Image (cartoon, rainbow, N blue to C red; front, side):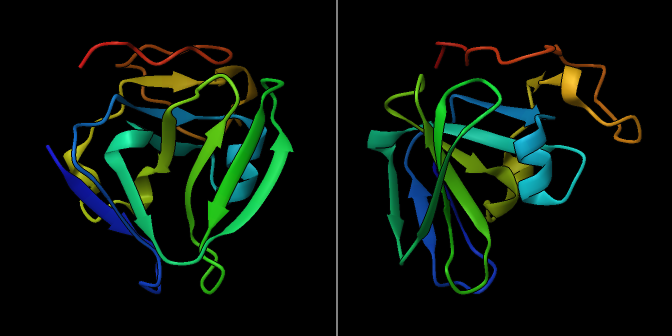
Length: 139
């Protein structure tokens, strides 16, 4: 499975030539703030299967997990595109909302439910974790 995505204005585009490792919902404080929503949805791919074109702005900080996260955005429209982080070397964490076809993936886990806001609906049909959990190694 290959897929593509990009930002709102079209200046940033990416492609992955392999199926994602996993797709998750994240309820951590940073994901909620950066997206302006109750949770963010992320799709994880390997770095060697990911190619991105267009200028990106970077923002780095230490996350709730204690890991350093480097987030990349379109400098023109501000769309969040992906991030990399300590502890997930060799992987790129895409904002699922940036996929051209976000219906092509399905969330498998919910992370940081301990930080979830009361008004956000959490999918109870998939495994949920109070904190971070490592992506599966399958595929």
